[in-house]
Amino acid sequence: MKPTLTLRQKTKQFLVILLPILITQISLSAITFFDTNMSGKASSTDLAGVAIGSSLWVPLQTGLSGILMGMTPIVSHLMGGGQAKKVAYHIMQGLWLALLLAVAILAVGSMLLPTILDGMKLDAEVRHIAFRFLSFLAIGIIPMFGYTVLRSFIDALGQTRISMTVTLISLPINIFLNYLLIFGNWGFPRLGGAGAGIASAITYWCVFIIAAIFVIRLKPFASFGVFRSFYGISLKVWKELLKIGVPIGFSIFFETAVFAAVTLLMSRFDTITIAAHQAAMNFASTLYMIPLSISMALTILVGFEKGAGRLKDARQYSILGIASAVALSLVTAVVLLVAGHYVAGLYSDESSVIKLTQHFLIYAIFFQISDAIATPVQGSLRGYKDVNPAFIITFISYWVIGLPVGYLLATFTGLGAYGFWVGLIAGLAAGAVLLLARLIKVQRPKQESPAAAASA
Image (cartoon, rainbow, N blue to C red; front, side):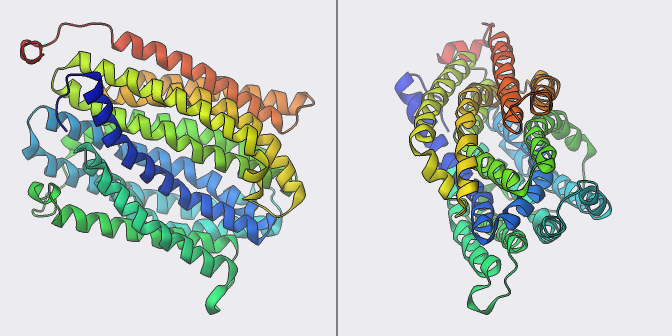
């Protein structure tokens, strides 16, 4: 990355950073998409089982990965401040922390998962599929967390095309393994939704191994010597990473967990409703990769400019990113309005599931508009290392407003399952307003450093 002077230069650098991130995020999301989509083609029971399993796993995975994503602004600030020699040491500390988090979640999950599933009162077959899906997926937890650290390093250097390449190499592996293991093709056992868990776990191992090879051998990563020396655990660096990463992780956890909570609460409805809800939510999550990618690009760019003391440039990147997200959200809204029936047909061949999924997708339109504001704003705030207020705002918006409103509407009005979606929309809208207000406060004009002023 390099300093930019004009809007045209900023737009070009923004797109250079953003587009590979977007392709990467869509590809990573496609792993879950194909797990859900191909399981749905097996049966609505398999789709429901994967839906329950994903709803338990995704909040934990994204929340803990969010902690490790704190490495991105740390590396961006180190590079912007001319402290590249410290990067390798910090990356190794991130990998140690990733290993600890993975082992902890495996230990806790092995003890609590049967009890959690038993308490949900699921159909026996749905419960069986969910348990096997999660058990197989657990094989890939360690490499997945490790890859999060390596990707944060890669992206913070502005080399987002490398992350894109890693993911694009791995995605066909996931699809092919799903083809073999979900449907039992080429002599493999027909495992249904549970087979998607094995496919994803193997894919995560491939992603980590490929990323590690790139970090060791390719420029500019090789010059940092990330794996060249052995570094013991540094609680001081862990404290620095956790100080930034924990609020990021909890913010992401509260956001993803509220959607998972809704899916779990919908277990009181029939299997068709669970399957349709998950199909619509899965597609909405795929569209969410657009504002999420913009958010990640803004964390890198704003962090780089903030680390160099160029506050005006950081503000300009924030405006550029948020405006782009809003414009793209209007495009996705049109897609859902015009092609909702075809989107629903991607997930099931059962007419009842398709019809109900199409109805849920209408509500997803409003998700996109709120996400287009809230998510890039969070990315900008992370670039400023201003993470604690966003954590509080996210909790209030989703868990004090969104989920309670959704539960009340679903339980005490005629909206039924749709009531949960209305509640989520209310929470997302509240979060967008509050987060934008926080960013405006953080970006109030401040005296720039003499060096930055001189360079301008």
